[in-house]
Amino acid sequence: MPKSAIHFKPPSIINKDDGTPRKVGYELEFSGLDLEQAGKVLRDALGGNLRQLSAAESELTVDELGVFHIELDWNFLKRKAEENEQKEENGEWIDLLAEAANSLVPMEIVCPPIAINDLQALTPMVVGLRQAGAVGTEESLLAAYGVHINTELPSLDAETLRAYLRAFSLLQWWLVDAHDVDVARKMSPYIDLYPEAYLKKLFTEPQPTLAQIFADYLEHNASRNRALDMLPLFAHIDQEALRRVVDDPKIQARPTFHYRLPNCHIEQEDWSLADSWNTWWIVEQLAQRRDDLENLCNNYLQASRPLIGVNRQEWVEFIDQWLKKHVLA
Image (tube, rainbow, N blue to C red; front, side):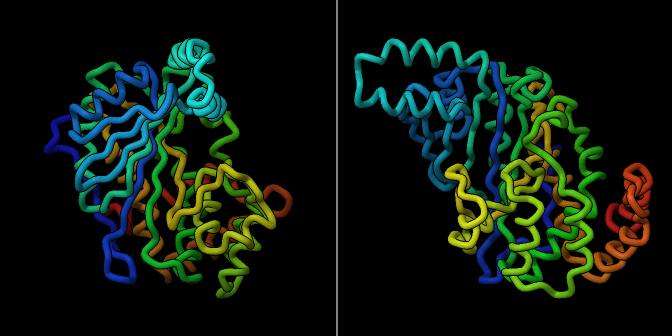
């Protein structure tokens, strides 16, 4: 895809309530390159200073962008590699393990938070990785490679949080189709959708407080394995309240959503990070249409039937037509 053809749609709100730009952090999973190759590709594409931290992890510091973490996405391997810094006699074993993991474990690049209007700066990274031989989702039936989008909220108040949760929940079935989520990823436990019982509570709770939003969410979604994982955000807002329910050391507090639905098709010439962003953009737009949200929530509740709930296909068709008329027109 020509660089000029790649366009990240700007959402209705690009600044936070303090006036500073909202930022987005990408996480990109792929295979086909080892740690050293991936690091060199990023350095060639973005410039900066590359430093290898262990047999499993490197980092690239780029002026004006921040620190990119390049790592084998296997916590066990990273832990062993860190132990190797203190136990040199295990170095050969660690190197062999890392070499084997390159063909079995996805490589992950964790990008620094970048202002929404500057996301185009990531395009040379994607192009460089593709040209070097990186391959994505369809390469592995086991790893289920994906793209994660960590988007800052405009505000951390209850009204904003509720609006985004409602927007995503109304769209979640439609988003699976819009992203054409790979079958292996659908079958994995990592991108489960919110259950209908939670949606009904979310759509009927009148003006909940942050505490009530927390309680309702955790009652039904006390897991990192959600297509829209809210636990990092909850940890940022109230770490103690979250840990009382979910004490998972993998939860990293940050003032963002953790959106995990998109596939990674980095090997395809016409694919870019804008593909995943421009689908998430629809959630952004719907979240700002508060009257429409209320009406759509009522439509959903009215479509629910005793015992069997809402017909998924019929709801997706309804939402698709509504979006074409009101958002995508």
